[in-house]
Length: 119
Image (cartoon, rainbow, N blue to C red; front, side, top):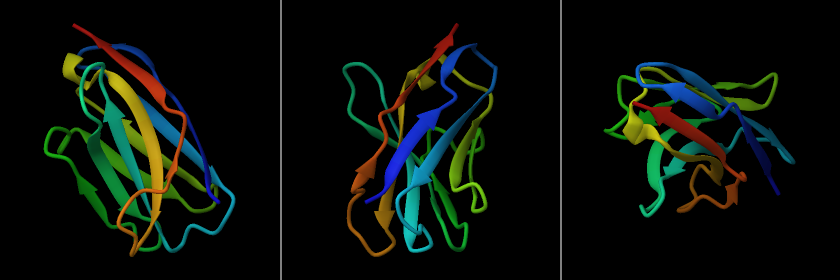
C-alpha cells in the first residue's frame, strides 16, 4: 500500500505561482512512477505530469509543458509540482497518484488539493 497526501493548493492570481507537494508513505517507491492529475468541475480528469522515482525521468501534458515542473525528493519521500505562469484554466482539484513502473494504471491516489486561479 502507498499513502499519498497532497498539500499546497490555494487561490492565486493569473500569472502567479504555486507549489504543490505530495507526501508518500507505506512502501519503497524506487519502482514507482509518480503522477499529478487534475480535474475541473464538469470535466474529465486530465494528466498533468509524471516522474519515475528512481531515474527522475519526467513527462508533461501539453497544456502545462514549459510552465509546470515535477520533481521528487527521495530523502523526504515527496513529489512536488511547481506551477508557474498560472492561468484561470488551470483551476482544478489536483491529485497525486502512484503506479508501479510496469503497471498499466495508477493504483494509489491522494485526496486532492484545490487550486483556483483568478483572472
